[in-house]
Length: 85
Image 1 (tube, rainbow, N blue to C red):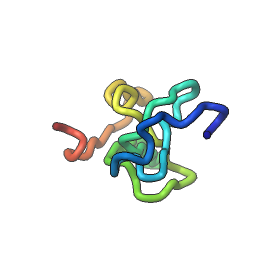
Image 2 (cartoon, rainbow, N blue to C red):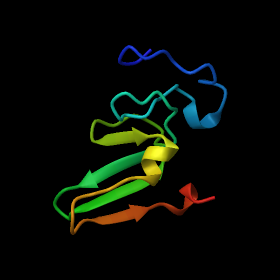
Image 3 (cartoon, rainbow, N blue to C red):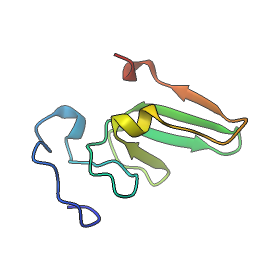
Image 4 (cartoon, one colour):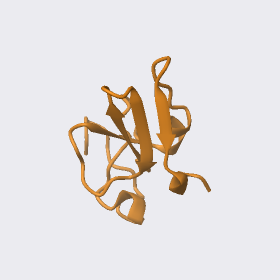
């Protein structure tokens, strides 16, 4: 359980959610499939496959939130190709 949200019944059944990580967006209980990191100095956001370990400066996102990602004006978004099916 995380933030009072019960784990989905499918948690632990797929490699994408080996540790039952959920989307970091408030109120979202979907399984995380991508990890977002920011580089404030270079004004860049990188979105890639779910990271192996949780990092304090990384944010796990579900597929819908990863698809709808927006960043501040002027920032560059780098999307790892493994996310595209």
